[in-house]
Structure formats: C-alpha cells, structure tokens
Amino acid sequence: MTLVLILIFSLLGSVGAVLLAAALFLARLDFSSRLKTIILSYATGSLLGAAFLGMIPHALEHGPAHAVLATVLAGIVGFFILEKLLVWRHCHEADCRAHARAGPLILVGDAVHNAIDGMAIALAFQQSWALGIGTALAVMAHEIPQEIGDIMILIHHGWSRGRAVLYNVMSSLTTIPGALLACWIGNRISGAAPYALAVSAASFIYIALADLTPDHRTQTRFRATLLQMIGIATGIGTIILVHALKHAGH
Image (cartoon, rainbow, N blue to C red; front, side, top):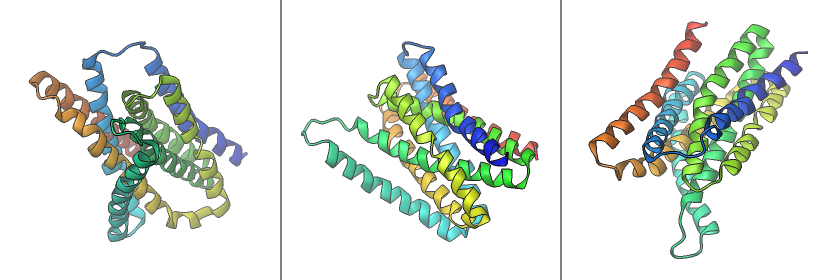
C-alpha cells in the first residue's frame, strides 16, 4: 500500500504539475508582448528562487558546504560546456539560431530535480503517510510555477506548445525511477541527494542568467523594466511563499 501511495503522489507532484501548468498556458491562444515580458521575468525569478531558496539550502542541510557549492560551480561550468556541445552538434550553419539550446538544458535540470522530488516523496512516505502526503503536496506546489516558467521558456525559444508540454511530461516521469530507487536503497541514497540537488540548481541558475537575462537587458524602457522587476519579484515571492507555507505546516 505504501508503494502505491508513493507512485500516486509522485505522479501528482510531477506530471500533475506539468498538466496544470499546460492548461494555464493552452487556455490562451496568443500572448501579447507585455504578457510575454511578465511571464519571462516570472520564469527568471522562479528559477533563481528555486535554486537559491530551495535546492541549494536543502543541499547544504545534508552535505558539506564546500563540496555542495563546488558542485554548483562545476555544474554551471559543465552546463556551459554542454551548451557549446549541443550548439555544435545541432547547429552547423553560420546563421543558425541557438534557441534550441535552452530546451535540452532545462529538461536535464527538470529530470534531475524531478528524480530528487521522487526520492524525497518516497523517503517521507517511509516515515509516515502524513509526512509523505505533506511532502508530495509541497513538491506539487513548487513544481507548478516552475513548470509554468519551463513551458513558457521553451515556447519563447521556438518550441511548439504541444512539444513543450510533451517533453516536460516526459522529463517529469523521472519522479518514478527516483522514488523506486529511494525505496530500494532507503536512507543510503541521502548521501548522493545533496549533490544531485546542486547540479539541478546549477542548471536553473545557468538558464536564468545566461539565457533569459540577455532578453531582459534588451528592453530599456521604464515600463518594460518595471514589468520585468514585478515579474522577477513575483517569481521569487512565489517560491518564498511556498517554502513559508511548507514550514508553517511542520
């Protein structure tokens, strides 16, 4: 019975979040430039908030600071190298646009993060049903704004809506092997979890700063800048609120 609950809540926390995020996007057939600016900024804030206020602090709670932060640094450099390799492998023309590079990077980060979420849900359910359900609800709560940002980023970089949703659903399914692995290994998996979180955080930091921030910098008008700041603050604020509600329930 516990395994069934783990699988159900792992799917709700990952695939459920993607589908809800997709529904919010597909409800609108078109986006104004102003709305795109707000959503892009929200994505930037939510990615940075998830990395600096969620994944990295959690990793530091369970691993040595020097090793965890070194992993974040190595991850950022590694994603830079990976981006170069992806552009080289998939872009051979001189005028080829590099919009596709954000897709694989954000999906890799999502896959790692979702696998860690699956591990967290499984380990919590092994302690108690109440803790497991609370953890799954917290995962879903922070995945929804993150997946909204991810789908928006992929669409912004040239992906169709259907493709963006499909690939996000596929990357979200890593919660299942993550949960099963945690069930099999048990508490021994906790030694690797901080470093997996650090790598995931590195991917979000790199995407937010290297891929999204340049788009913000090209808009210098006061109204556009104000919308950007509101979007970024809202994205960060969402992550803060989710964590505050999570801790308030303990």
